[in-house]
Image (cartoon, rainbow, N blue to C red; front, side, top):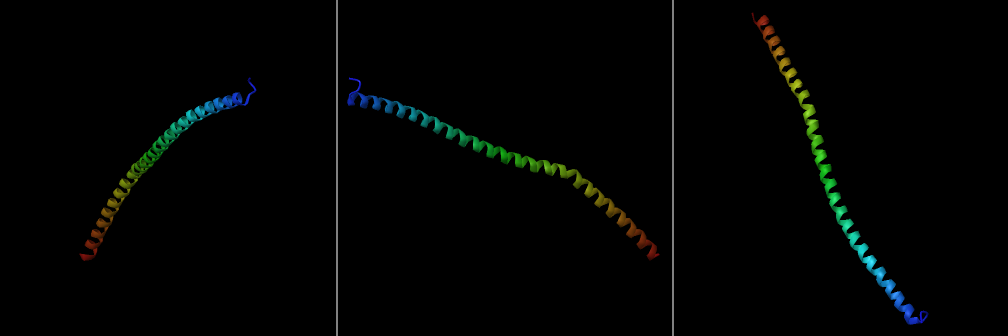
Length: 94
């Protein structure tokens, strides 16, 4: 009885049904993993953008003391040159 074509067919159908069920479950798992991957990719992109903005802010803050010193030297140089020009003008005009 176990070797009849109908028995083999039923057995194959049962196996096929089990395989289809497992494939369906795996398909749901794959879909879930795809959604997680998309969310993680979006998060990584946001963090990359945030890191770039922070790097730009840090670079600006690091440049600021140099700019202040540069301005101070510019003002001092202007004062010295102005005083020198005044002294020369006073010397030659008297």
